[in-house]
Image 1 (cartoon, chains in turn green, purple):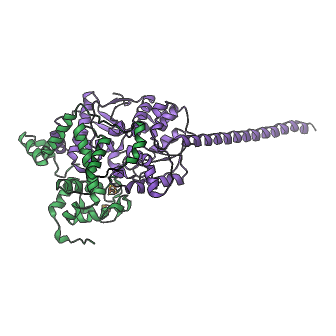
Image 2 (cartoon, chains in turn green, purple):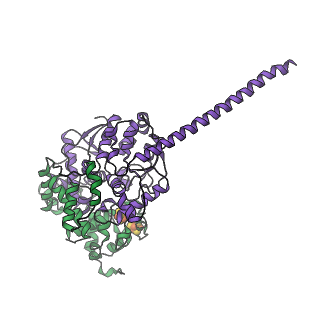
Image 3 (spheres, rainbow over the protein chains, first blue to last red):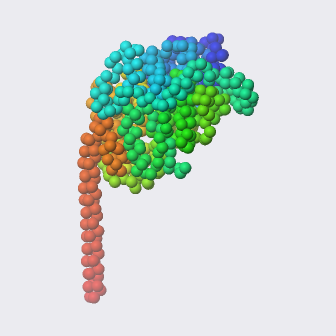
Length: 211
Length: 332
Ligand code: SF4
Ligand code: SF4
């Protein structure tokens, strides 16, 4: 079992999780309420309350490589039930975002599926269910994924064979391009605002991440 | 703009897997006088997967374009049938209250929003803005005798602090709505438990386990149908019901209609609006059982009424007999 040694604490990591999630992690007193209600625990390597403890202890690698952050269903049960009002699901999400940024593979099938979805939106402006499923099957080699469902859906017209391309798909693709190029990076935005003398906005920023 | 006019965001699944939700929603809103204007050329809201893997600024930028599109036709308030879309639209608005976050989003969209926006679920509008009494008045074919398990799913009311709708742990809005259609609403303790969300594709053991529990309970309660408000829940419980049965060795055959489909049925809006043909598990046996029960209920009611009448009749007889005998006695 993984032990928790406080001497290895990566303080920058703790701060980044706090900033991205906007949550004060020190408020967690390990009551386990979040884990008690979590429907996905059976798929995790670490129950979510234990993940919280690992984050408090600054165990960056362990947290960002955990299966837990990929298998979380974002059902918000934990956030609803935490006696200290910590948005636990938001903390898990922040870790997942950081894992993506750090180029972690995550749980391969899950990440591949999400990636296929995002790419579909990038291309068409909307998610195209059949297309993204096909992409997922192609990339994972799981060619039998849900083929049993096709006969239930095709005759009912519930699978759109062709993507619904929106007129504004260029505009949407531009949003993705700007994002990839770092247009929304906090530092870039902050310095641009400073250059534009938008001191009001810079000053209003609490430094606590999203409200 | 009157409070009964909203911008409408159908969501990507409304074009495919949740076609029947989308159609019945429009029909029901029309019947209740709620005017919907579809957001022109809408894009994906940046729902789960984008929010899951990328960054809040990107998913909020996608949501922000939807609000910008709504502004272009003079609309500020958007409603959506899909809880997952709702969550993302909601989160985007909430996060954009922070000026720096808003600036990051605008750096992506290059389209600053000019108005204050709100977003709600279709269910919330029907329960709060329209109200159950108006719904009851629109019912032509009551669902008398239909035993339903109301299943809200995890997202509709959570997190309570930001959704501000119903009780996040024990919501009752759908219960009330179904009651006003005349259905028999069963207490369903797993009403906010997770169905397995989008894990049906990448992790096959999740949905049989989580949605399996829901179907097991519904069967135990002898429910005719599990009524839902979310395309993901619907897909897991209905379309994947055979997969669940195969994995768990069960033999459930429980239809899983959207609440709007039952409304369309109760309002008598026709097959196209009801869209029951789109469900994987047929509603027909459930309606047959409903009719059987309704007939039994009516018979009981008739018999009870007859008994009452008889009782009242005999009481009146006695009374009149007494009355008739009293003056006779008095005469003696
Ligand atoms: S419910 Fe809150 S306080 Fe309790 S263990 Fe989970 S995060 Fe910590
Ligand atoms: S949001 Fe994730 S961690 Fe929290 S209860 Fe749901 S599945 Fe578990």
